[in-house]
Amino acid sequence: AQPLPPPPLIRIPLIMLSGLTSVKLKKATASPPQQPIKVRPPRCNNSEEFYKLMGEANMEEYYDSIEKFTFPSVFSVLTVAGAQAIIEVYHAIHSIANPEERKFYNWSGNEELKKIEADIDSSHKKLGCEYIFIRTSSRSPKDAALSERFQFIYNEFLDSLNRGSRDDVDTEENRKLHALYHMGTKALRCRNGSDAVNLLVRSERLQDDLQHFVKKPSLYQLCVREFTDFDVELEFRGFVWDNTLTAITQYNEFCYFPEMTRHRDVLAKVITEFTNTHLIGKISLEAFVIDFIVISTAGVGANEGEKYSIDKLEVKVVEVNPFAEFAGAGLFRWEFPQDADILYGGGEAFA
Image 1 (cartoon, rainbow, N blue to C red):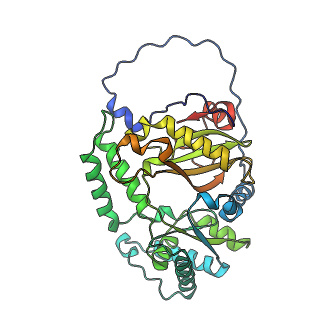
Image 2 (image 1 turned 180 degrees about the vertical axis):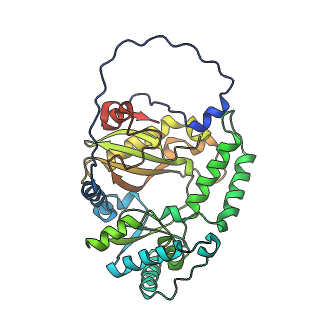
Image 3 (image 1 turned 90 degrees about the horizontal axis):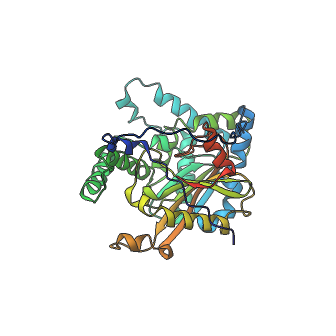
């Protein structure tokens, strides 16, 4: 068995600083000279390297390796004509000056999009689940998820946060950010192929990938996944370099999660053991960034101690991303040499 990481490092989200305005700072004494930290060259220097790294982390490249530990998924090939249709409708929507009118754009007369809708509905039927999550080989259309019809999700969850217990730094602003994060995740839940296509044609973050695919056709797929509800505070990002898990961070860099923070050590232990046992050496990449969610099987009504009991925690893999500067680093920063040193294995951390 590989050794567990040293006591994890706590990094405070910026939102917490609003609760520390009365704290007086003590003048610091000079630190002894330290060895200079290596400034590492970027792993991605141009578009060719970008698409190479992205292609290596396309979902179909590693899905078989994580199938037992992720959500059931069905793949279908996206044609060049289908990709072109998504691009064209995206631009048609965004050519409409009035944002209110954009919401009601009707793509139902587009034959290529109707084929995509039918493919998604077919995959949904194979999964046999109530709700689905849509993504492409490379990424999801999560930027297109927020809309006025999800306002009730935000209000309902914010009310539940306001009724719950909190500590001194769980401010009103923090709870609003937490509710927005919850809503953004819930908003990706699709009832059918029509819902999924609505996300695809409104997503800006898909555009570069689709245009690259149209210019240089290769295997590019739609992936329909079973949608599973989870506690957004238990979403994490891990960093693997040279087949070693070097760091873990909460996925959302803007929120402070009091409950998660109280149980960070057990969460670090569960994620580390899972990664070492099931992922290292199983995924073909030796360096990657990986997203997890942790699910408690304690059941509704369990108290906090039961919920975070180590034998009640299960880890699910969301996706694998390239180990490169364009992958979000959560509470770390690629551009900070000290952080980059940690991510490249200079010291393990749970931030």
